[in-house]
Image: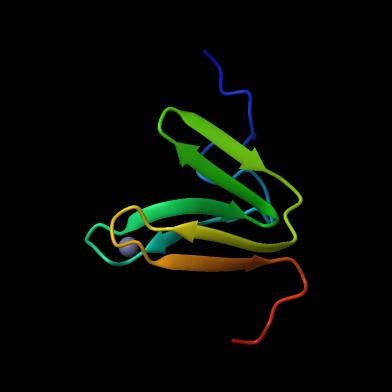
Length: 83
Ligand SMILES: [Zn+2]
C-alpha cells in the first residue's frame, strides 16, 4: 500500500498548484446546501449517486437550491461581469 498519487501526500487535499477547489453553496441553512464544487474551469456536480465533472467551462452556470428554491448564478472564465 503505497501512496502513488501526488507525491507529497500530506492531508490529501489539493491536486496540484493552481487547482484549488472551492465550494459553491447556498447559505439558506446550516450547514449550507452544496450546489457544486469548482476547480478553475472545472465544475464538479454530485447528483444522488453519480458525479459529473464538467471541464473547460466558460460562461454561466445556474443552479437552483433544492431547499429554498433560490437560483444561483456562477460565472466562470475571463468574461466576468463586475457585479
Ligand atoms: Zn437555499
